[in-house]
Amino acid sequence: MLPPAKEAILDNCFGAATSITLGDGNKASFWTESCLPDGVTITSRAPKLFSFIKLSKLTVAAALLNNNWVKDIKGHGIPDTIKWKFTADGVYSSASAYKMFFLGNSTSLWAKSL
Image 1 (cartoon, rainbow, N blue to C red):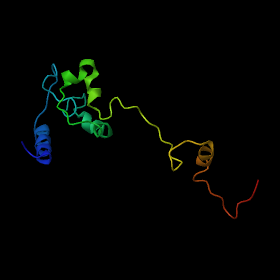
Image 2 (tube, rainbow, N blue to C red; image 1 turned 30 degrees about the vertical axis):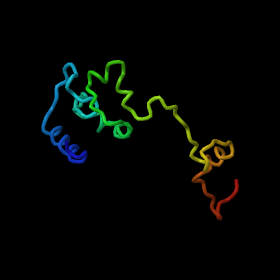
Image 3 (cartoon, helix red, strand yellow; image 1 turned 180 degrees about the horizontal axis):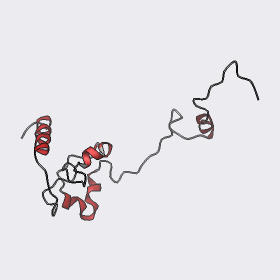
């Protein structure tokens, strides 16, 4: 068993030196094989999504069965949370929303009032 960094290097070399034609999907890795129509991987197409993926050897066939690929995403089953970016505590307020509309606006000392 190689250290993860060396295994990643070997995986990248192997991926660059081979191509896969998708058949039944029992050998092709869902996340890392270049089997999208334009020849890229899901990993390279959606790097932010892939950053949430657990270490996975999921095949295309297994991933597509009952949408099992969703279970590979860290946090699956944990409710989403929404944080308001314009307050320190992340909680929405109408005052912070009002101030948000004026961010970036500036007035000049020499501007005339209409």
